[in-house]
Length: 152
Image 1 (cartoon, one colour):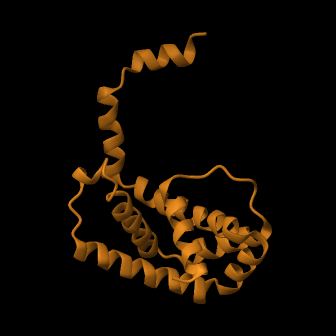
Image 2: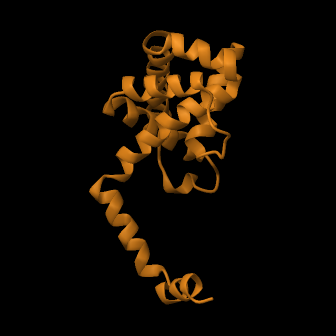
């Protein structure tokens, strides 16, 4: 695995795991962010979310909640690899080179963070996902939260 591919893999893992607190992105990273968001179709964003799900599902603390087969995982990895190849080597090649040159791994991380956020917006806007948030409220002591947030 080349150094650039390792950087890209680590960046994707970090970005999809949780939003990072970062300094303001440099202009090259912002340009790459804009290009990635502009170039990724809704289907592309779904591919990224599916990949992130398969990665997180391997963690021992949540593995019992998912039954992703090796064949499914391989198919998702293949689709995501094809997507990343297209985004970095074709759609946003100039922006990616500039972001790496000026910001290194952080330049990529910031840019892919923006794409990850767009993908999560798509996911979170789904009605069944929204209803799951409502279901959670059945188990939250809303009175305790209200007292903690309002009372001083």
